[in-house]
Length: 281
Image 1 (tube, rainbow, N blue to C red):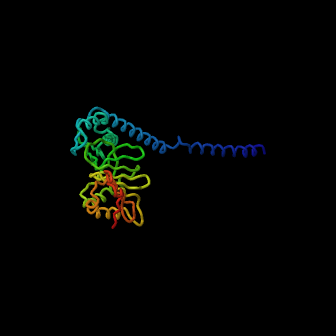
Image 2: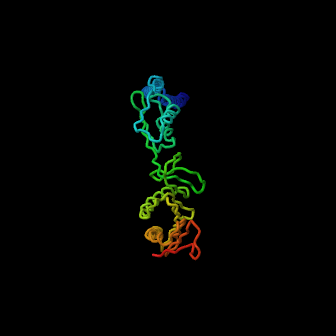
Image 3: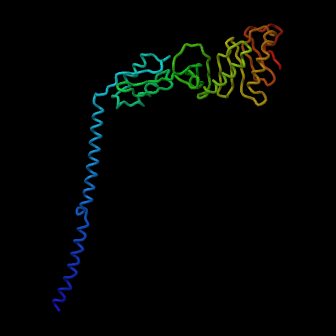
């Protein structure tokens, strides 16, 4: 009976030992195929990292210096000295390591540059294309009073110019609107033989036009019964008759009336005549 008990007690011990050995056999270190795969992956990553480091080191060597800046678009307002200054201060690195976006941004900071395009030119050059602003008017913001310029796209930019151009004044962000109105009103004023040299828009959206003959046209705000263009058209049509009838040099033409306009002369008004003369259709 004692032997039977000993054998029965020993049997579970042997089974437990087998289970323990089975767990040991299933460990990571007892899987050669998995270890070989991990080893290969580590070697691959190490080779990639070493290769990248070698390539970076090679490209950073002074083997591909930049020696030439090729300007493909002849500059008009931008000077050669400005281009040379940007090239000296903004171009860093060699043919492969130069940051083209930062170089482009540096050229676009020049006063007359609207857009710049920069490309590599093998083996040691940089190609530069410039789009310059085409100024069409002076701009004064009513909020700040700062004088700037307006280009053909109706964009405001900072630069200096002494060209003969019309002057715009209006709230911030209204330059494109003033440019469009300028083109419309200029065509309408041609029968008067005068050029539009100033266009003003107030914060209350009231319009004023300054002509090269000294006349200030007060259009006022848009009205449903009398649109701005209709009032201006009526005034231009009546202008020859007005000049013949009053015989005075007009300083201000007030077109804010739905059915007519008021004129204010420059000189003193003769006795017996009203300072404001109404013009009807």
